[in-house]
Image 1 (spheres, rainbow, N blue to C red):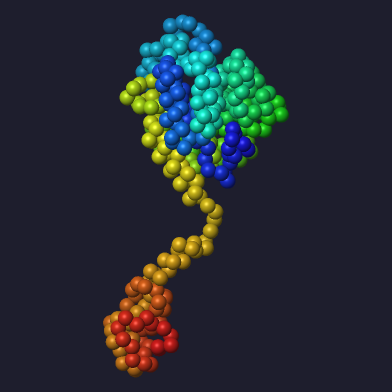
Image 2 (tube, one colour; image 1 turned 180 degrees about the horizontal axis):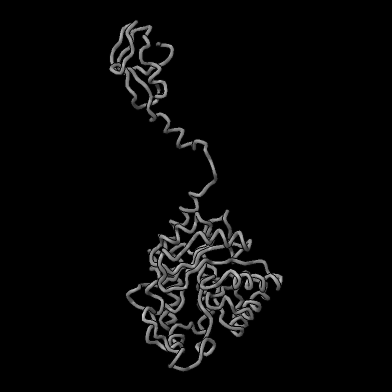
Length: 346
């Protein structure tokens, strides 16, 4: 399938997505700097999020509207305040999109309600993302599917039945352009929770493209996902973790993301196909195999023993599998030390 300007699938290098999220720290200048930095990494696309605090939650700071989970990065924050800080102002979207296009990168967004979809349609995005926390919002998914544009869906927290409902909703609107991203909705996530074998299972079950939305620290999980069938990789991105930001703790810095892009491409290049043929480079190395050489001067009629032959490199003598066969035989001509064995000499 095609996403933005790029073909995406197992026969193409992995499609690499920078997720800006709220790491702009409420500065348009910083947001544009993030775009500029992302463009230096080899990323194919940059994603933002389209919502307001009022489209996400209620302006309350008690009960279920207040984060008390001691393991959360956002413990002690009211949801409304958190979304107010993390949101990307809608009036910034065009400037960010234009900067992405200036660099030749695809631009897209995650809408969180129907008004966001309408806004992004007016903006002219060419594809969409559905976040893990919205992958059961069938009303939103149907509206996005109706655009007939590619849809990337993170699978965090979803059961097989829930994913089936989401995929069915998209297909019911006549849209087959679907990418599912294996995702663990923990921030940060641990590699042990990645369960990358699920990537191929998703591909087999739903007959769609599959990738990875990765919230782990580092790049090991992302690289490992490529030979397991990920054709898309998404990671959060920031200029400098020390400068903070709502998602900075599990975001990659530019140099790290660039290395990840390169290593994911290396992983993809290495997959190849099932082959038991020697490569051209291997053929040039055959000379360095071991073979049997005469290790002492010998006269015609002398008996070959362990003391006058040796299995060494290079490979111009008889293969070592004939070593025992040679023992006890006689040479029929004089030979010098360093002569490769051959049946003509026996």
